[in-house]
Length: 81
Image (cartoon, rainbow, N blue to C red; front, side):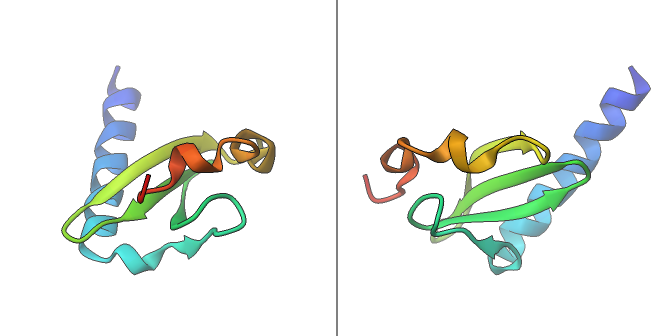
């Protein structure tokens, strides 16, 4: 249980950094409009930078075929929908 708690604590801290500095991520327009990504250990956080917050789109294991997961669903992740 301690490992899971530590993981969640680190994730929360990372999300707070992204909220304060949303431009820290890499723009991923090839996946969906406005999506950015940020590495988190073996995972990748996908998010939109909004006016006063961030919106988490997905958190995926980095070894997955990320392009195929987003393929055909780009509209679902569009913050202007």
